[in-house]
Length: 328
Image (cartoon, rainbow, N blue to C red; front, side, top):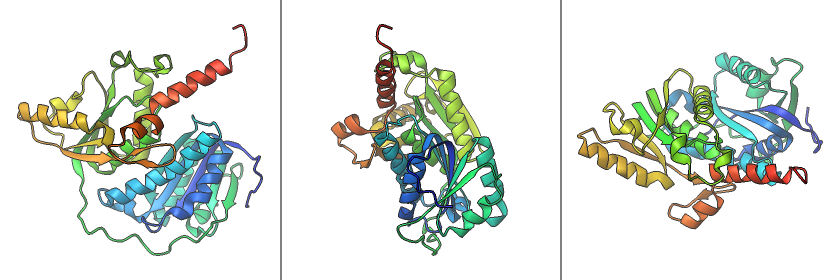
């Protein structure tokens, strides 16, 4: 049914949509807005696309799609003071033979209470019909129809690297982290190495009392990447310097970084050259803010408005103190 009650809320929800053309996804906006507005704790977005079976292609298109969905959800959550709303965006095959199983798995593993669907999306409506009756189904009208044309065939061959690496603090795993991890997994053929910064190196971080411990950060990274691309080998280790495994592992072919951490990739390149290790292909992800993609080089905007672990820790600290009873 179509649910228009603005006061309806659900703790854990699933948003399902078929994206038949990877370049035409703006129709998702009202569905994302409603789902993010009415979900209080966890929202899992599963997008069915034909590009799933061509991992390693459409690098920029996939990044734009993920960024659009994460930004839409993050913007709504922030406007409503739900800065800790946990949003995952997954891509799955636009395949009738696997969709029902994928939807059931996503619903069961996330204790989903509500599923949001786009009006007229016969693919997801058909497959979601098999979900248990306890799961409330909400169909959202679209401002304009979905594209029925398929995604364009990439004019470049798939680029999959056997071993890919990336690193970061991954504290309070947020949209920026998830896009970075998603795109790294998107181009990985066999093994993805993720270096998580040791807590000892974070002692000077702002609002350090709100830092997650290393085990929590590793666990959340592993759970996310295993959901995004099941079946790869994942090495989620602890790093105590800027290099991590990239400073010694000759089998790594590619490094995924954001625009703000390019200086770190340059240092890694120089170090590997010094150690006579093979050069790495560096793949760069955009930095995102609460409501836009930030232009490289705009350092003030990067610092002031980007979605960051520091901003989340500050929000937690401020709200914890604000909710404390007087005299305690």
